[in-house]
Amino acid sequence: MATEEQIKSVAYAIWEQQGRPEGKHLEHYLRAKQILEGSEAIRPIELAPPPQVAELASPPPVIGLPPSPPIPELGPPTKKPKRVTRRKKK
Image 1 (cartoon, rainbow, N blue to C red):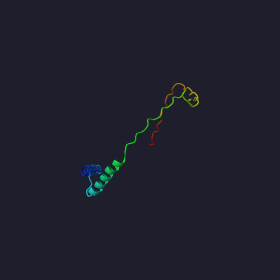
Image 2 (image 1 turned 90 degrees about the horizontal axis):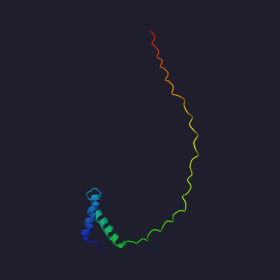
Image 3 (image 1 turned 180 degrees about the horizontal axis):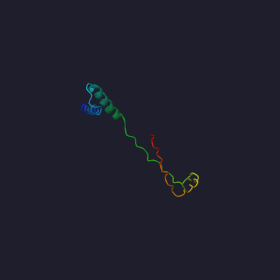
Image 4 (image 1 turned 30 degrees about the vertical axis):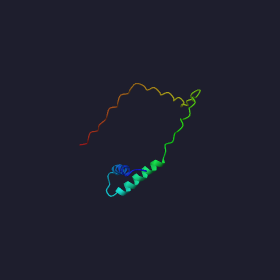
């Protein structure tokens, strides 16, 4: 059974965690009591170690995409066309 001091300590931690709201002291106290009394009923369970994983004889085949077609070569760079400006009519 949890002591009064333990319950108050957990209730205080809950109160701080929730941003120190006013008027919720009874709710925090009851929640702390529930947490502490519930934790006494729970016992740690010893788990067996995980089973060993067998190594594969060979890695699985890698399926890739077909080769892409070659990129056509471009000729020498071309000159930019001159910009034509129109004059306003008078």
